[in-house]
Image 1 (cartoon, rainbow, N blue to C red):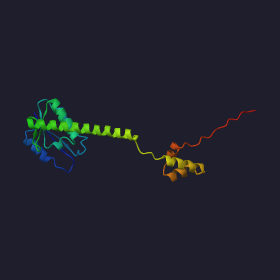
Image 2 (tube, rainbow, N blue to C red):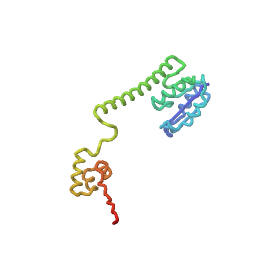
Image 3 (cartoon, rainbow, N blue to C red):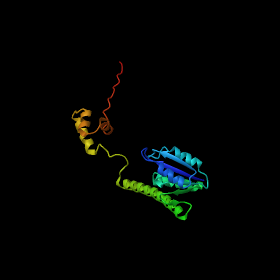
Image 4 (spheres, one colour):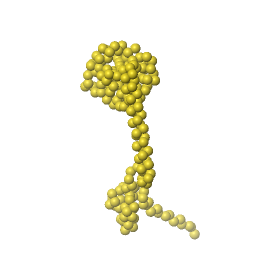
Length: 192
């Protein structure tokens, strides 16, 4: 069976040209989503996926109506291939029933895999550089060694902690994290 899928990103877009092209392509049933720019809530696409069976052909007007990113497109193409469903994109001239169409899909899948591997390599390389330079993750320390020394001098001179923190440009909790507040010792009295 030939099934069609049409999607517009904004309510202002007209879905009729897609619908017309899908009907002309021989689609028996057309599933639609309107106003779904974020590709999150796609009830029409969910119904389409539930309807697809081995040997069916899914026809889309254009690939960007089908997958919102290379990663999503790769996942959808992989899923269709596993399920034995063919894909035809009218505007892009892609048909997975042909060698050229299958090669294109393999290329998209390989591209998405390469993108993931490059991201992983960059992450690992960044960790190695951080490790070699002694950097740890997270934000830069607000209280440098010189600020800690200066804070101790201010507090020793009798300046209230809130004023010392303010003059150093840090919060009171940050000041206390690096220079704990003096603990008050409670002297126990023994009764005679």
